[in-house]
Length: 245
Image (tube, helix red, strand yellow):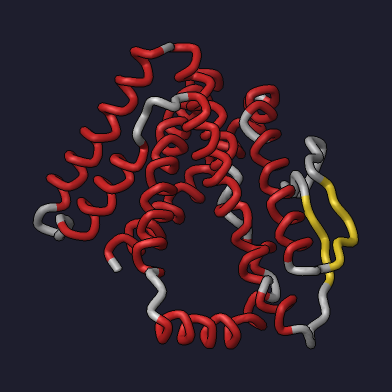
């Protein structure tokens, strides 16, 4: 529960930060806005498209990236489905959450490809242990310090390997995860799948599948990559302030 709370809080905070920074970039520096949006938006829409196909939805229109969009919608995937098909309806939440799933996977694969010598599983396990077993409101400062120290060790190690690779890694992960958080439009109609999701959850619990461990691994992994977005957000916000002055 603690890990889930930390995850939802982080997603909410990052979503607000992303919105503020991207709007400031859009008005102060269009080139930098495109640099921080193009790859991530394309990945976001491709993830929706792939899950639509997996869910046997009918894709009616696709726009992977539209830099001239006036209403803030830089891309979209329009699809339809048979409301009487349990399979297609059950895929609605997965289609909505596709950017989170695919974005996290892309960032992870890129990291292990760029840094095959880095054991990311150790970092993920540290996050899980700290948040699940060590967090308490009277010890929150200590937990945050330990998390920051662990993350800082990774960054220092990667910088020592190569500055160029480090900057490429930071940019790529940030631009992918900038747009990994689903929008409100992505969740349109997902309420229809709630009864099916509830039944599936009961079946999974009854069977005794190790969902808890799988969920913890996925959340810890995504929390690790989300911190990159937070760091880049702070740097970009400072940049927009300097550029405006």
